[in-house]
Image 1 (cartoon, helix red, strand yellow):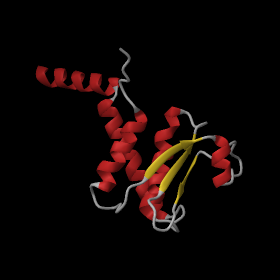
Image 2 (image 1 turned 60 degrees about the horizontal axis):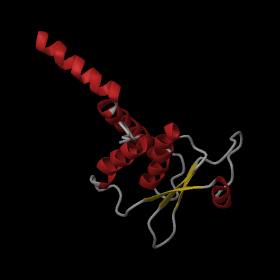
Image 3 (image 1 turned 45 degrees about the vertical axis):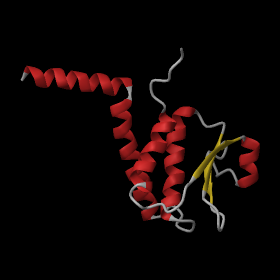
Image 4 (image 1 turned 180 degrees about the vertical axis):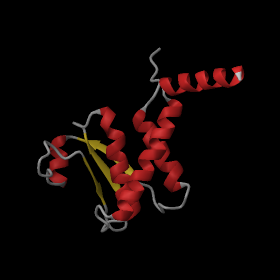
Length: 137
């Protein structure tokens, strides 16, 4: 049987749901789709100095926001892309990358890193070491 010890994408989604959905910041569901680079380029322009567009959020009147993630994004970078786009969902369609967006993005990343440390193999080992050390005291 094959198991995945730590799924960073799932952990980021759970972090966002715990922080914002349960906290009342987001009134509606936000859908995430991983799409091809070709499809991504139909939705937006590649930023200057970038090879491809990593992700974007699409706001449509009367519909749930939708996060689009380019399938060229490495799995290890997807949590940050999700956090970035979720910060846009929190800040609103016209907020850009202002202070509220930056605060939301920072809060998401701090919470994610804390959750990641607690769930990862290294984090679990660190917790066991701390417990063993505390028992010696």
